Length: 293
Length: 252
Image (tube, rainbow over all chains, first blue to last red; front, side, top):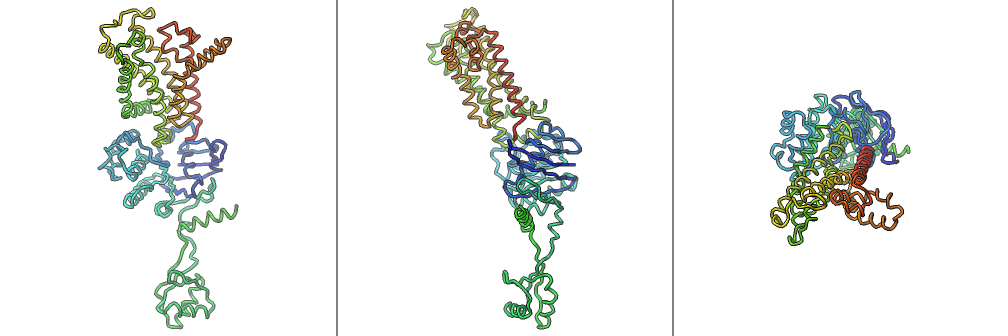
């Protein structure tokens, strides 16, 4: 569906995106992650033909250029802040680009905007404006939706609702490219992740790669007091850490430690795996990349 | 293009400023007519200053029509939803031209009303002024204003495509339109040998709003009516092409 090959984006003479290549398939939810200034918004703008670039962007096999956007008719986007005319009502803002009245009304209802949609947009709160911006991106059942920080300004209820809606659209074949600084939010929706650092893509992998990270340590709790267990481990040269009122042990030591505890008639109350969080995994990737530089 | 143009008209019609401009124009024309004792044929033939007021209003509205897209973060959506950038620029231009002609038409009727209210018994529309009837003078002057409006609108669009700030564009537009003419006259006086060439400078083009009905202005502009019309059209085309090129090339 979306095929990006070797794009370089320039702001004046300054290189803003370096040699980026990736693809997005129907139904895929791709998270675009990177530190501030890494080039997330620039990539999104480039895909929409809003910046000068070299390389190739094709959508459904049709070439997108900075001067020709006609093939973006099936693309919806929310870039930076919601694109809203304050002198129009929410519904008028949507009607401006809507091609299907039923789809428009269904979307208003689905996003829970019925109560205020006829009010002038200038009276909306930040959250209401954000929802309207997302509605604009979802209008006309697009094949690809580009969302730049979609959860900005949304309350918990709205965030959950938007996440569900993204899933619903994805199930029906709509692809998403989403950037967010709230990594946990992205983790809940995306199927693959693109990591950007210093204007270039450093990783483009399925989300499973992060969710199935190797277990390096286990958290251990027992029926005995912690001091007694620590002494026992010391005496048997088994390394450990004491953190948050728990003993942290290495994966390879779980079997001998269980045997040792059993010999001393100490029972386990908790032995739980510790994985790297999604945030830690991302930070590690970025740190490794910085180290390599 | 047709859809984008209809969107532009829709947006224009839904902005309070579009309607407020008609009321402001009427108010400014009345302001020009006061004190009533000073109303003369010249003021009536210039539609109680309607030309200058319409130009000022259009410079501000032209800059705002593009600047509000940056202000509201709608430019990106507008561009990617359009087949190409030129169609967005041209739709805005067409909307402004149509609106300016409506404003000019309104100014004509406002001039009729103000004359009727204030000095109907003192001046007849049929009296001769500058070899035409007063009403013909008014129509010719407004035709000159219409031509200069094309110059002003394309200049504003060109500038706003280069500089995102409407305030800066308005200041430059007003400077070119109103302070430019005396500067142009001063430079031409200072360099009489080059006056024929300097007469084609853009600051001189505003003389079209009075010269078509009043040939004596030729002494100031150093251009014939035909040359002034041609000059305005050439600058309009130049600003349009530069504006289109800038709008097409810039990053949003």
